Image 1: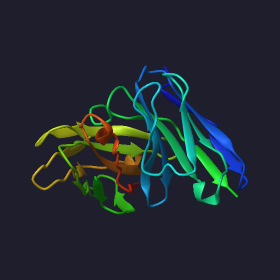
Image 2: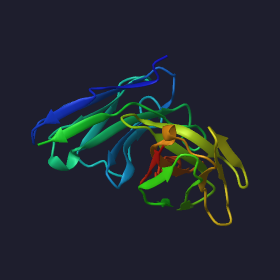
Image 3: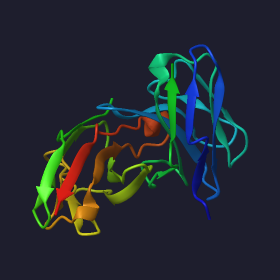
Image 4: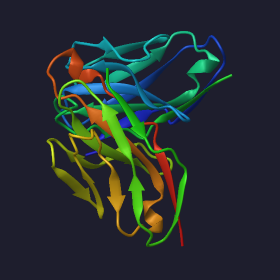
Length: 114
Length: 116
């Protein structure tokens, strides 16, 4: 039981390049989330997927897209990376609503955009 | 919307000292309250939670009580250890159904360093 896994662990991009961050969970959770963590800012929700087949914007969605590929997988895409997207990205999942269940987090992807 | 004010760090304590990290929040409705901990180089993990007024969450010697009247959920530990060095996040989380339940807010985090 691996929990929540994320790939890659580290990535360096040049401005304007694109990439997809991958996330998978093996806990049969319904809801999945993407956050970014910046110094002094805590975690901010980018997008979430309440259930398979649905996605919605969070607090800071601009510059990102997501895909809920199936119940297990939730990917985050940067179409044209900008230095402001330099951050640590965390994927998380919950069995049901986050207000009722704990969130399980992946180990994070550290992204640098030059 | 929801917001959370968390004691700013960093906090440096000697081993066996008493720890308090303050957390106050504003929220619509009646949130569940969580403390998450992040050890160096890792993702966040649940430390403890409380889901109704006057509930006390506890784990690994840490405690926090849901104070509805003061909208607070302060984290305490009577005797910290070096292994408690980490960043701690307070997270009031809506329990409503629908889109409101995804207004997920975390405090900015409090970095704790415990020295021998």
